[in-house]
Length: 471
Image (tube, rainbow, N blue to C red; front, side, top):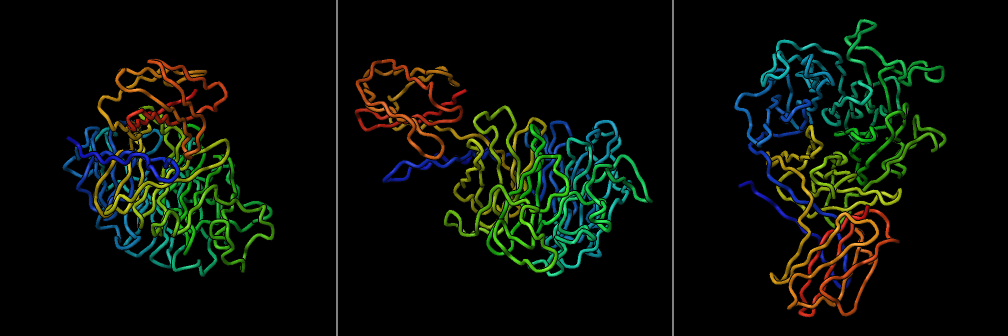
């Protein structure tokens, strides 16, 4: 049996408050410093270990004994350095191309390509390395390191500001350096002596920025440790690690080129250091859609790990939720869109993990890795049924519902006195208190589409919580 850790919704008195929570299912374990999880278009997951090894996890959670690749001798691994990123070419199943981002023995960033032949092999050829980029790192921290292909077929590369603290070189705002940027390159062509080409619609250089480096897609990032694309909308999501107080989540549509996320001028949406090359007009900056402080929710936080927006099918109640985490607090954060407003909640801490990476499998299911525990968990929707009396049983149908639903009581020995319906923010939307028959029809014609909780209170002071989806 796999270990299952359950976290149900919180019940806080003197009022009822719901916090969106999840259930973590142990999927695989025994990894050393896992920092990335990717898939190659099939049922396997590829787990990147910071020391320079990539391992394959099969769909049943077993790990292949032989590493997919081992480039440990080429990797400088300590602190924030190491093998940091992995991305598989969109046509990997035919060309076998995959790309990695690591810190070499000189302390600099390397982005390179390897080949698996045949592509469905569980072992890649470490002699096939072709280096695309080598980027000098002035300090040991803030390397970024993530890689991902967009729906446009181009490779996106996240780079931190070069390190130290406070971006002393003002590199994130300097378009003549690749540090503190999101890069975008075409790995299927080459030009100018490079092993890649510049997409024609990259934003630089232009007449206003004639010296800007053409690989740059976006600027003003401090340390975009992990980013992802929403597989449904193709929006780009970035978890950008903050300086001393604010961790931010950035999101833009995939066609927004030349975005300036504001660092070091701003940390989150707060002024940090406006000396140097800060835009005169804040309208030229793109502020985060959400952020949290290091003291949010009462647990000390320090470093965001960006994740994914759930687009799988096995957990329908999680659809559209964006998952992220904090390395220090061991909490997993959840963003939910409520009619254009992003609401943030945190789970209780999952102590001893040190969340460093999220991953998405080929079906859109989401996984999370702990660098301290060496464990990989799958994120599931919670079991929301809280049954305080085994005789207390009901059926709710249809679910999902449209205009009304029915509550049918299967045990006539218990009388239901109150039905309460709450949204995910804990707001009471509807309450029914009257003599209940064995079957009650509840109208929901004026309720918005979404996810709700139904609280049933009996004459014996028992209660039961059920989930309801309104389409």
